[in-house]
Length: 113
Image (tube, rainbow, N blue to C red; front, top):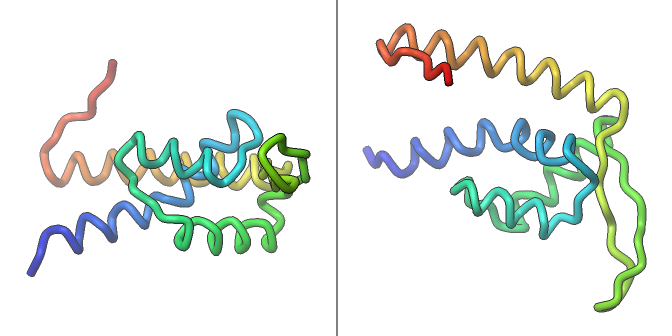
């Protein structure tokens, strides 16, 4: 069994939370989201992100608007909807509960800074 496969699955599991968190700061173009994810070592290729954005948009969690670009055609910028803000809050609560539970089980004390 390869640890890299498990690590990849763990990253995929938190990708939605991370994308929504990025968009909670401000609207973003997909390449900007990918850049942020890569900077945090949650490496994502466009083929992973676009289906996720489409699914979240279709679920009413995201919306988008078109903005003119100096470097070509208009660009689609994504933003959280009101439903998306509530959805993110619920994901964050669940994430925090999960982190606490895993830390208790693995005996890694929480890092309260």
